[in-house]
Image (cartoon, rainbow, N blue to C red; front, side, top):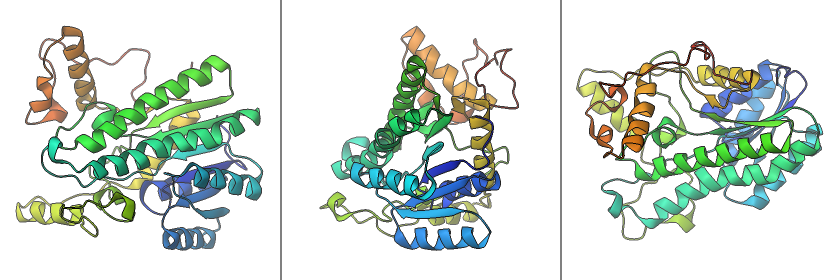
Length: 322
């Protein structure tokens, strides 16, 4: 899919953060956009700001944990613009779980899987057949993470497990779309940037907008806790101020990935390749995943098997169809 002008994008989790950056980037290409979020105030304010900037956008309050709500989002998009060409299943949350995996509250698991996994599945269920029936080029992008999508960070089991699931679901979606000959393709977006730094998104604020049905009886509340603020305080105290990378780079990456029909939409790096290879070698060798215990997981690499880049894959863009 190379031409975007006049086409329609639907983005979930678009009231702020990466989702909003995606909407802004699509609109800059001349697309119309439907931005969806579970927070009505964010939908209202973001829609107003983007319209003020001259973009053609429609805001919809949607709860991705509900198939009916996501189907209503689809219907709103069709009513507003007559079609959908790009779907970004981007809404996601951090569970806020702390301590050992066996100590995590079951509702942390339920909430995270309902949003991060079933939210993607509901998007696929609600939109895919409609996009196929349009008989024009379309693209579905599911947001994952290197944490779980490549290798897990052992102290964030809940989040990593959800992103591993999203990765597998999207692999299956890609395969079935190709096998069926559909004009719709699928990709995984690994939020990453060329500029070094953290991404300031809602994922740092576990507990925000957490429904009552996912309460944690007997556990301390997470509502309102800002883990980014606490992290910044620790880093500042250590003389290591936190640097943020622009979210616009993630949006640029996503657009380039769609244009190239890349499945793995990510900024490649040696550290990333090392993690992937370390896991693969552990599986092939049937050896313990000791790479998970390395002090610097991002730099871990088996000494006897250096990471290499396939000669057919340019380093400056995601790999896509020939």
